[in-house]
Image (cartoon, rainbow, N blue to C red; front, side):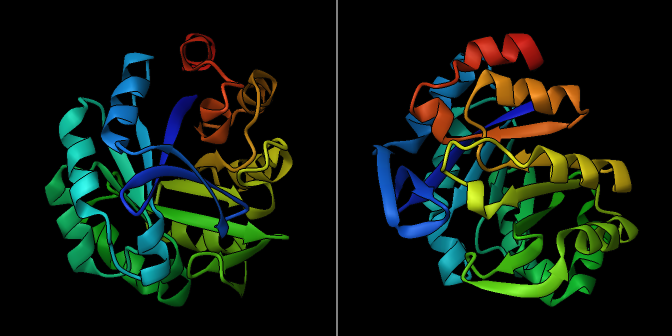
Amino acid sequence: MQLYPAIDIKEGKCVRLTQGLFDQVKIYSDTPSDMAKLWVEKGASFLHLVDLDGALAGSSVNEDVIRSIVQAVSVPVQIGGGIRNRETVQYMLNLGVARVIIGTKAVQNPEFIRELVVEFGPEHIVVGVDAKDGMVAIEGWEKVSSISALDLCKQMKEYGVRHIVYTDIARDGMLSGPNVMMTKKLTMETGMDIIASGGVSSMEDLCQLYEEGIKGAIIGKALYEKRIDLEEAVACFG
């Protein structure tokens, strides 16, 4: 199971939100690139970045920070947040980002994803499926759409997408455990690489995901609050 330490960027700093609420912010580092290096030293083989400012603005905001992280580490990086046009995808890949995560645009214009997969390849295009009560939320989680997480995943599979980051918003930043049942359901019904995001709080959570055959897990607050030791987690599941 691929483990992805999360680095959420807001105003150039490494932060964590609670349930995606922008007024529930805790700053963990003024230098995200140092945090990236720390996770790699502890065994991370892939990093998950989120441009929180970009998610709200609808365009990438923290390019300098993203560039500094990519240059600071030797492992691949995936990034999400405000990536809603082809030019931004190209720009991020040119920065050295390995995978670009697209959420809102996948709901608003699914054909756009098909075009990106054809142009850039399925290894570089990831769809972020963020759900509230099973329905997909968009625009920095500010709006809930009328499409279910499962239906969106099935549609994206038809368009050649291989990797999905699935977030249960109610659990994000809550350290309440991931939505294992839904993550497993998406994995079983689509056969895709479904990466669990939101709520991972302990080694037991990771063990549960691993035993259910989940391909990847994003770990955020649990690392920063020292509830999970990354070296131990990599040794067990990485």
